[in-house]
Each structure stands twice: as structure tokens, then as C-alpha cells.
Length: 548
Image 1 (cartoon, helix red, strand yellow):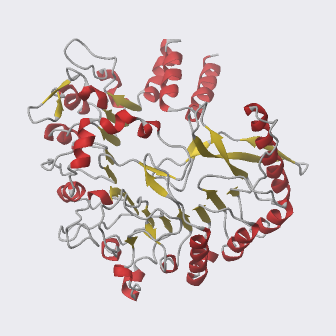
Image 2: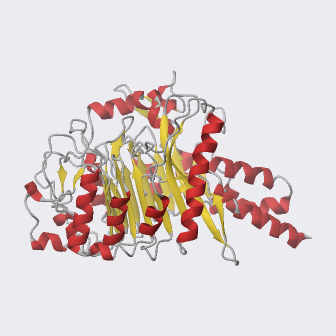
Image 3: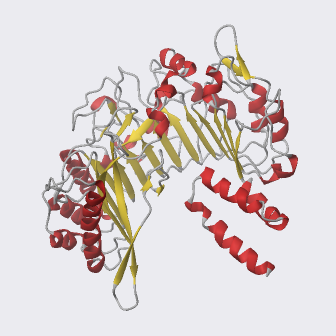
């Protein structure tokens, strides 16, 4: 019987990855109070990922920390300090200095507690204050720390650390205050559309007096040669330095093991064309490059307009020496802030490509035009990378037809994943299903397909009931999914874009309606509608379940 209980418990826990962090923890807590044996079994899972401080767990004079008995179980630690505590009157669990900034009361319990958490491998800081040197030193001394994330945190220019000899960080992320980006018109974090988020004093101060160069200073202090993943913001680059092409010039800092480089943020205008080849030469093992910047606020916002950030110095053709550094890239993601002209052709060994549209909240982006994407396909064909491409994601402002998909199939015959999204989905006039199935059937390795198919809209004024409209929308997409599944024998999942009204408001979002394809032994197929998904920025290769 005990074994049966454990088997059932395993199946329950195995399903928890379908839930978000809060729901997952609530389920685990309710299970843990059933018996002592179940509590003992679940405790390492419950406390493998934790957030601190908890708004409701405190004494009269101090915040409560995790009991000693559970500290060895912690593997992922989020120092997530509520930003509204600094705005309370009087401030909660801290004070305002005479010159303005909020500082927390001494975090002795955090510093002492981290010494009892040797198994932490990931630490994230989100706070409205600059962590003290003592706190940062305590974090750096966690023996197993491999992933450090500093996000939306009010660091100051004098930040410094005491780095122990055993410090071997593999992943580092620094996202400065006020960086709030979104891709397309799909799902986003609700806090970025909350006025209170933008009105926090430390964020307003950062907007008026941005502190730049912190990433360079932090990494220079760390002297990291073990990094394999680096996510930094171009917003942090100093606009007046002469070596904009290489923000780490003169530091002696190289990245011999770096495999993934992600640049986000937005350059403050005026800016010039830059050539990142000198920067990337510091990264001999780089395989995954993501230029996920938003256009400057003053940049032109018309579809198809070239934005100021260019990979080619002063708009001149890239010489052979510069171009060679991009030939090693296997995965490349770029945004509407990057001039694509004559760029893709230098990535001759590409296997994965994303061309997307990014903007700073709360605005909506202008995606590349159909002509822009046609040029991308031309460059893929010219470089020869099209024949090697396995993964392709595109986003556009325009309605697409079967001829565009036909060109994709001709240039990229080895695709296993294809996603083409419309930024602000709009209904079309309908289309011939067989034309699309004939095109995609030429992709003999295609396993997953997601497209903004031009389904005909509803013109019947009597069909204004939301539930009826939902059935109408779902029926068309289900039927077409079934049609494609019977004609593309290797297809495992198919999805179609649609426009979703958000509750009773006038706001809409682009969403995907995906179907898993189950192939039965008699040759028939069965469709299962999948849960809604989204790409959690800055991830562009793998989507995950969307929790509304």
C-alpha cells in the first residue's frame, strides 16, 4: 500500500510542471499536510525553488527566513523585494535616506541563511535598492552558484564585490531598471501595463538619470572565463565611448567559452551604425546570437523602415575578415531594430533563424514588411544557409499568401519547425486548403507548423455572441488542422494564429491555437487541442505554457 501511495504521489508531482509557481506551491503544501511521510517526501521538491521575502511572514521587527532544516533543499533562490514597500508611508522594512534612495534594514538573516544553502545554483535579484557589498559577497560565496540574474534592480555606480577563488559562474543576466520589452502583440507581463510600475520613484529617477556602464564594471570585476550564457542590455552601453562596436574594449575581458549572447534594450538616440564583429571575436565558441533590441523611441515607426542599429559599420559592406566571425553562428535571432540589408547572407551555417518585432511597453511594435522578409529569404538563398535551416520563425505586419509560403518551402526544404506570425492578426478572405497542403507537403522533415492563415472572418451580424464566435473560430481551425494532419505524415503539431479579446475590455492579443496530432495504428489521426503557449522573453526558440 505504501508503494502504491508513492506511485500515485509520483504521478501527481510529475504533472505539476503544467502549473505556475504559485499554484504548484499551493498544491504541494496541501499534499504535504496529509501525513509525515508525504511531507518528508515532498519537502525537497517544495523548497527546491523559493522566493524571499514573503510579505506575510515576519515578526514584529524583522522578516522571517527559511528554517534551517529546509535550507539544503534550495536550488533556485529569488530575492524578489516588493517594490511598493519603498513607497509606503512610512517605508516598509527599510528607510529612505536623506538624499532619497530606499535602503532595506540590515539583511543579516539573508546573509547568514545563504551560508546554509550550498546547493543553490541559480540566484535572481529583483529589488528597488542596491544590494550591499555584504549581500553580494554572501551570494558570490555560494559554492554551487552557476547562474546569476540581476533584473530591474537599482544598482549604483560604486557597486563592487569580493570574488572568491572558487567562483565559476556559467550564466549571467543583467537587465537594467525600466527595461520592459514585448514581442509582437501577443501575451505580456501585466505589470508592464500598470501605471504604478512606471511611477515608482527609483524607476523615475533611473529614467531621468540612467546609470550606464554597470554591466562592463560588474563583468570586469568578476573576470569570468567560465561563462557560457550572457544576457546584457545595450541600454547600459555608454553612448559617448569610442569603442561602441566593442563595449568591453580595453578591459582585457574575453569570453572563451561563451555559447549564447543576448543583447536587449534600446540605444538612446542619436546613435550610429556599429559593427559587432570585434566584440564577437572575443567569443570563439559562440553559437547562439540574439539581437533582441527595440527601436529608439524617436526612430521612424513606419512598416519596413530601416532602424538605426546596423551590424555593418557606417552602412559599408562587411569585409571578409569581419564576415568570418558570423559564419560560426548556428542560431540567430534579430528584431525590427536591426537593419537586415546584406546581413543574413553572412550567416552561412545557420540552423535556426528568428526575425521578430520588439517594442518597449506599453506601445505596440511595427513588424517587418513582407518585402523585408522576402529579402531575408533571398539572403538565405544566396548564403546557402536556407538549405541547412531547420527552424524558422518570422513575424510580419502584412497579410501573406500561399506564394510566400511556397518560396519558404523552396529555399528552406529541411525545415522541421516553421512559424509565421502576423503582428496584429487580421482575418482574410479565405483560401484554398489544398494549395497550402501541397506547399507544406514538400517539406519532408516538417514536424511542427504554426501560421497566420487568412481564415475568412465572420460577416453575419447575428453571430455576435462571444461563445458562438469562439465556436466559429475554433471550428475552422480544427477542420484545417485535421486536413493538414492527414496530408503531412510527419507533422506532430499544428497551430493557427487568432485575435483574442481580453475579457470585457477593448484590448486584444494575438494567440496561437495549437493541436497535437495523435496518429493511430489504423492510419487515422486524432487532434488534441493544446494549452495556450507563449515565448517568455528573451527566449525565442522554445515556447512554454501560458498561465493567464
